[in-house]
Length: 278
Image: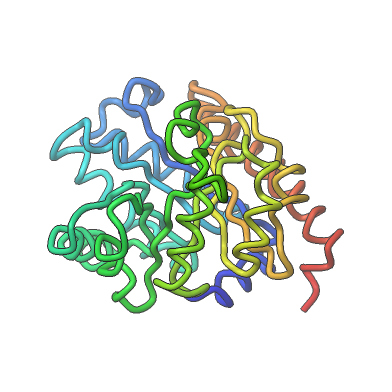
């Protein structure tokens, strides 16, 4: 899926919502715990309830790896379920990998060939040769961490480099030579919305993956005001406020309601910018 195809899906669904599948075994409704793979069963119900309003899903690998083999099986089953039932959806492996080239080749094969995800989040700290194996796979995306929402982002990302740009800006400037708008995105936390204007000057056409709206306090309006471009250019990820909107046997209805509420807001934003027009 290239950038134009992703934008077409956004226009068709009137949404730029990415649902984060940060599925915590301890929060799964008791009614599902008797299943062989409760995490997968929970994900399946969430996907069915929200897919009408979303263009992407982002399983966070930590929530699956903690369960060992059963967790990885749940992840694989989740990706396969989306592929077989909703093939237009964009699947992001939130894995935050970043290693030497030979290891990255293995990771690229694992997530793009074996698992068949569309994209993977990556740490660019080790430089070009740690990222290039992911960019070499046709139709797949590398999503580079640029400016994150956590408190520790100031330790490195916000440092000034020789009194000029901040380090996250240097990461963006340097990595622009590695890929294109059709195979590379950047992660920018929603709570850093004020920096999006500066970031858009550096990368006016690239898609941005924006976590942090909802439970983490980020504002959808501020993110859209500062970060949206003339092709939308945003995937806004929302996890907990959708998938844990209710933890009883009504969790599907609650997730659907919250996803539909966010989609309605996104539709209004797209309409106000005339991005829903054919």
